[in-house]
Length: 167
Image 1 (cartoon, rainbow, N blue to C red):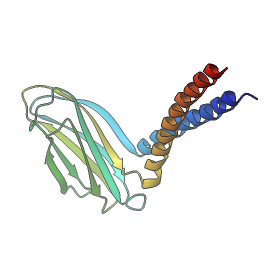
Image 2 (cartoon, helix red, strand yellow):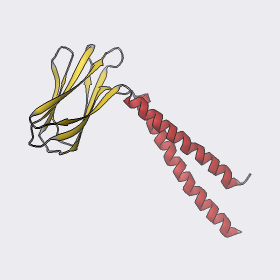
Image 3 (cartoon, rainbow, N blue to C red):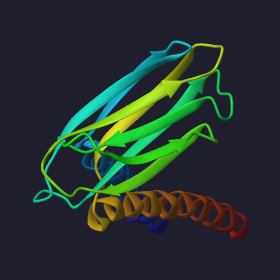
């Protein structure tokens, strides 16, 4: 079999494996996170809630991404534990905010997003368990395989061009 063809099959397999692992890693990462897209009117709030249990995961995570009408200092985020105690309170100073928190007791955790600005804001919010290191590494391995495969395609092209010039 021709050498470039063998390399092309290997590189194709690397790219396919990279795509599959990247997709699978993404699915694993967000499977325990509730994600919602909400419009928040001026001087109003939106709540997102999720059942969390410390026996499943000890660390929770929330993320808020303002996708329309971001104004610094107008969006505030609070996380409440099942007893109603505020465990996190912060003002969103970037269009994307993510923070972890400890899951101390089982029950419904609530994420409240308030808009104190003059314009309606569109946000995407997520609340759930923080993925473990193994889950996050699956997506990273897939990304690395994709990069290696793409570099391999360039290498095969250079090899083929040099080989033709010698003939």
